[in-house]
Image (tube, rainbow, N blue to C red; front, side, top):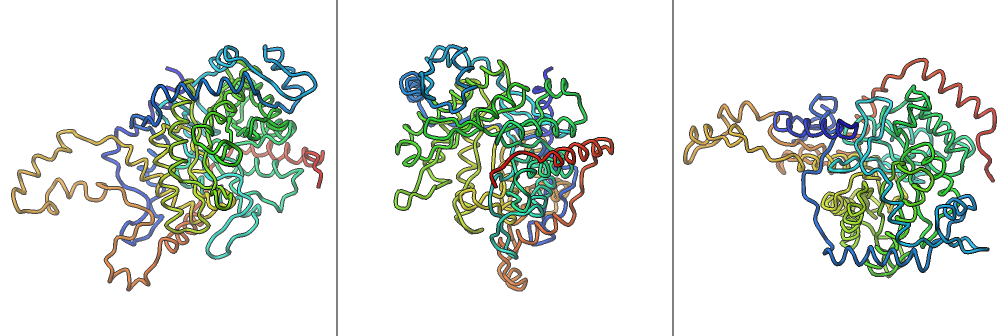
Length: 532
């Protein structure tokens, strides 16, 4: 059995036993929310399977029309590859590089030949093997919010991120098994100088969490530092790490139809070391992409295929993920809009395209709300149902995303965790075993009775249903006597309680010592050059 099958098999086993392990985090009727996080029952959230058949937003003819149009874009228009080394590699692979320009065109035969070399599903390895993540197939993996320049909580408001905020958000991600990895810096710690920021942040990710994590592709040396930190953190040789992908990077096309030098350098370094590259065009219909969803999908697909193909030029068989991040703009203001019907359609269509190429699919949980309100909930839920129906595998920004990605919210993190767990519960197959059919209980109660006192109920009442973290199910009078607390109130309380009970995962002393020595040496060397 392959490693990916091992991880998926574990998820199936966990899912199959769900009916007997219903104890959930929080007290649904206004009790001590956040308690019970470390219950063994929550371990089943470490592996999530999408048991639903994907919804098909595109007909077979529509899917092929987008695919064919994307290949025509690559053949006729091409993309700008803004790194000479990348253009040289593509030319050697058979692409047409227009002399004196950055433009590269690839015929459809070459594109499909290269994309076919990608491995499909794979396992992303953590320093704690129990945290390995299956990527692809029916598996779903959630990463917390990433790359926000600001963070917010109700007590301190919206602010520029600091190392303390960064660390606190990482600790929260470690505390919930429904969060399978950190997607990047949840907030940018601007009190750390850019030349050494990556060293401190990646070191913190090794120490504060035992889950997989992300490295930014912002220049070759940062990638090399990240690779070495990941190797040290796992306590493995370079050869073992190369055989077991342990680090991922997000590569964004500079839409429309360009890949800039740092992104291409990131592909070269990560793919050449057999680490995970998540190719993600960020196309906003009406701004950086055509105003129609279909046209935006054509551009998204062309950019994605070009990036995926390049990973396979660098190293055939290197793990790669098809990413889609197509939404629309508000045509009145030009502001990005998320969690819209158009976003849902694009997410579902992106899943169909990824499956057509046999690749894992990356998408995102998004909203454009500025505070924890109804908009933040319904836009995120629209996003979540779109990605569930669309067959998303690798879910970025799953918890904490606010303000179109500009802000990482502590309270929104808790609300999203609650919604993610609800999604996971929905995906548990409905138990129709003889015991679940409850014929003895139905016979015992008969017409006109009730089930509160039956043995069937009493043996299950504590674990029968999902107990939400934030929902307040008290009646109006009890709720009023408690001060009429809102969801914002509950979420504010829960993240603080969770942070107070955070437990740092164990790390071998020799690994910690080697990691500290590497970071200290690289800092003495000046880190990486910056222009400020």
